[in-house]
Image (tube, rainbow, N blue to C red; front, side, top):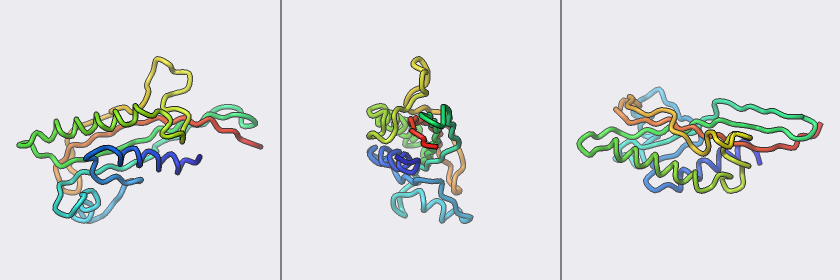
Length: 160
């Protein structure tokens, strides 16, 4: 499997969560706030609710002539338009928990990775983590935002 296949599996897992909104395999940009907002809305009239995936770092260790361990830390960023009257923070928090539950059910992402926890770290971080959450301005809209972290591990066989 490739890094692209891992990214695709993450997108598929997110898209399986009910009410997730728009999921992009990469961070979408636009100089125009109206256009950027459109990219993160299910329909033109819907409130902003969207996610993107980014790979901030990859570490590879081991013996290049036999097995190497590839550890990727993925950032999954979500935004949802803030609507205080409808307690949107609680709705978004429940959505985050639904995402965490979806990833907890399958640590191999359908067999694409070997695990979603650091190798040899049995008492440490596993599955998806909430790294940060709070209000932000995004595309000219006051939003709730969450930055989730996911570690994926693949054991690779490298041939010189």
